[in-house]
Length: 224
Image 1: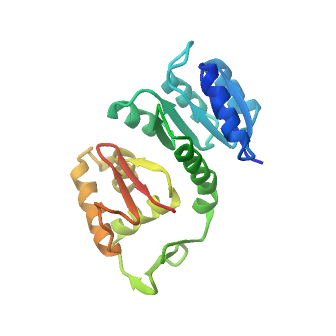
Image 2: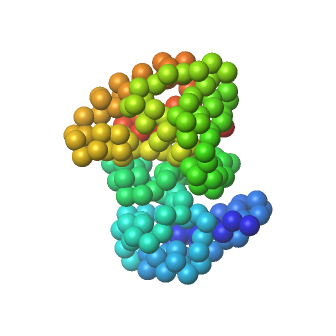
């Protein structure tokens, strides 16, 4: 049974999430402020954390950074803050996903399931989704049985996306992973690379089967 830590100072939200998650078989613990959240992230050993940014004692972005100093468990930010800059800051600080309040509980549950599965996907030797098969060991890719040849950069992008399938990855994080410190925040380089990879996969940006764009933020590989 997966344990989920809810960090929110609104009792009605905690109660609602507790009922919703409990009905799906999750073990739920909660914290109402940043100090308790940091402590519970270590003591209760959660499998996933849902974090609000508007906490009474400290900003949730700070809580996120403190948690990431000792824990790598999947973390979803759940916040009323909808600015692109808030999303990018949270994701770059280590959040795995960002959901804006008000939210649909079914969508949140789907994101939770994806993230709880992502560690196993990342550690796997192969990836398989909708006809796309990747052998990470031999660096071989097939789509519906046909082999696909990728450049080094295209393969690096595909591997990052699939190893974090279901997670929203920011442009800056992807750029730094692919180009290293030489990446100078010129996101058009990444957009060109994504477009090339989509073309290799026969993916349609307007109706994606594989790579979904979050405008101004980053990309998510669709794993369902």
